[in-house]
Image (cartoon, rainbow, N blue to C red):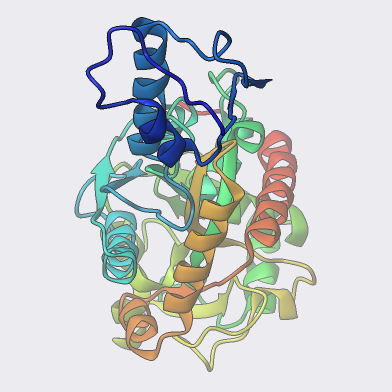
Length: 363
């Protein structure tokens, strides 16, 4: 007949048959050693309690959160633009969508400064667990060349998650300018070198680099005039003659006949101005758009990246959500995360050449 372990000083609560019921063996193992003899199976009270408590602790320890659980708490989306800006508003639309889809609050946190570099650096150093995300923009591609020194390498340190939208721009002129088409404008600019002023929203802004790309590809000499505030009063008044502006900010002026749209800067015609040709139809290969998406710290679990990408892309084809974006004058742009990663690399290389050739440096 099998004999059971006795615990020295035991009151019988964990006697031999109790252990048999717990471990399920007449002769069981502790730490890989098979116990069979009476002497071998004598345990001190302290050693037994250590084993028993350890087993209980392992049973109740919480398991680490997985991609299937994500998210289990609120998520921050760091935005490098001020609250109330167009970039901020579109970021809030996507966080609202993700909050509804994933059952946890996604919150926008604005961290402005250094052309979005402050926001980016805060995410670079965040824990890569999916709970701190970055509102990624064209500015990140520009900044790699605009700034001589930054404390991070965007392509190396940020994991692209999903593309969200693009903002097409329009090549527009003051009505007082005689040019009514892109070829006419090029001819006018070549006949008046250094006399046509180009309005921008500041050094290194999207309309600045878009204009510099046009200058180099069309072979014209335009004078960049940088504004900290709105340049539209001067453009409407003819003090500056041309701008490459995001369509949403120009649409009312164009529809009201106060500005003349010559062409859109995208690779395809814009839904917002469907009758306006592309710059690329007259300057082959020309394309320039503002774009926005979501990134995360490098080494964020691939399952979390995949889930976010899936949910964001679902929003971009949802008729109601898509209509809300179009109402703001922006166009949904869905991509897989690896496709978005390649897009960022390509954009960074493309604009580096433009910025270097034009000698642009951040203020």
